[in-house]
Structure formats: structure tokens, C-alpha cells
Length: 333
View 1 (cartoon, rainbow, N blue to C red):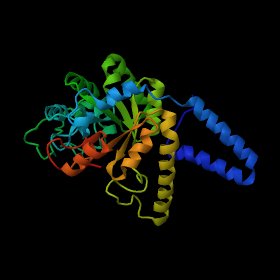
View 2 (cartoon, rainbow, N blue to C red):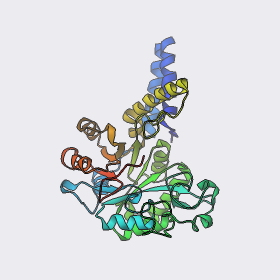
View 3 (cartoon, helix red, strand yellow):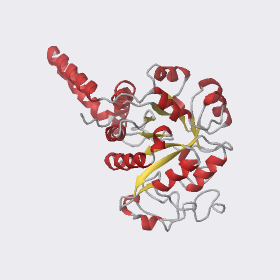
View 4 (tube, one colour):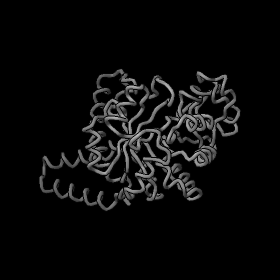
């Protein structure tokens, strides 16, 4: 099958074809038709709607209308993020499921970790890719949490440990894959074969379309989703420009536009995703309808205030991801 890279890579091909069209309209038309044919032949169909709905609506529904509430990083406000304690706390607080971040240690062990370093969440320091699991097991994952005294000594769990805990608590799992497409697809494929219940109780998500494509290649029966925050190439989560150079910033903005087009008109279809996880600032009733017409569900993140939660429950009527199931809090980006 055709290997699909990120949105900017695909769009660079389309841009080249458009330039060809300015010199030779017939050649341009032939090349575009050939590209379209390749994409059709290489794309993955969506999993049956009945099964994706089972995954997205979950076994436990905390809100009326079948809306599912997913604890972001396990519920990082209520307990140390991406830990067994967070998973248990989310379940006790009534979450339908948990969103968990998948990363790898230096010795290739899949663990729960959001950042590239352990500095922000633990009492350790250093790049995750340079630390072995034996090093991680000595760290306190609650060291920098607001409830550090309550959860003192909490460990960074392996992916296997977290999955087993979620299964025992009947929680839906949103696997947020941070990168490593080949490694992640292989590990997750093995987990699905070991725990077949995951086919109906989990979804693999990523900002990187390559990750999702590799996952569908490894196991086309897995429910998947693309994660998207418009302007993420040019700006950080809080809106701060990534580059101080005006030229680089404007170029990044152009790439943002191209990536946004690719996600909404190309990549979702190639990957055959069942859902799209979108940053809350860009979600509206019209946006939800845009995706509903394509058989794709919208999931909002990160929804943390009572007003926002009511809006998602009563008006939008879509699933959402939150840092806390108990109170208002500041969002993680």
C-alpha cells in the first residue's frame, strides 16, 4: 500500500501538481487523476459504524443522551497524570474512559508519559528516550502534582499495566500515540491480540496521520481518530508563536492552512478514521455537522469548566475530554 506521511508532505505533492498545471493543463489533470486513484486504492475504509459507536459511546455513560466523558491523561487535575492512581480516580469519579499517552523508554518499553522529558511531572530529570525503564521505576510520578502528599510514591506505569487496569474497571481507552509510528503500531497490535476486548473498548488517536495509517496497516479492525488543533505548526497551545522570526512564522502559518485542508478533505478518508479529536476553541454546531455527514464523530478537548461541560452535553451533544470530573480547572495544552 502507499505510505502516507503527514499532511504537509502530501500537500507539497498537490502543490507541485498545481504548479505543473500552470505550464501544462493536460499533464496536471493526468497527474492529479493518478494521485487520486492511488489514494483511493490505498485508503482504509472506516470500521463499521455500529462498532465505532460502541467504542465512542462507551459502556458507562455519565451524562444523559449517551455522552461519554473521558479523563484527560487519566484526569491530571484529580490525580498524577498518566498513572494507575489517575485511572482509578477517574473510574471512581464516574468517567466513561481515560485518555492515556503512549511513549517509549530508551530500552523500548511502552509507558505512559506525555512529555519528551520526565522533568515536569516527576522528581527526576532527562529525556525519556535516554532513560531506561529501570530508571523510571525509581521516580515519583506524583512529585510535582498539587496532591503530591496524597499520591506520594506513585510510579510511572507500563502500557500493559495501564491497559489491564482499564479493562478491569471497564473504562474505554483513548490511546494518544505521541510518535514512533512503527513501534507503536506493533505494540498496540500485540495488545489487541492479547486483549480482544480492546476492539470494542478503545480507540487509537494521534496528531500524526502516519501513526494512524500505520495502525490501520497493522490491524485494520482498530478504531482510530486524528487529533487536531488548528495553527499548531505556527503556535503553541497557549497561542504563543513558535518562532520569533516573522518569515518563519508566516511560512508556518501557510503550512497550518495546508495541514488543515489535508485533515478535513484528504487524510481522514485515507486513514478511514471514525472520530476527530479537536481543540475546543474550534468546535461549533456547524463543525459537528460537517463531520457527521462524513460518518466521523467529533470529540472536544480539553473541557474543564462547568459552563463548557453543560454546552457539550446539552447543545453539541458530543463526547468531551476533561482534566477533572469534579471541579473547574485550568487546561493542559
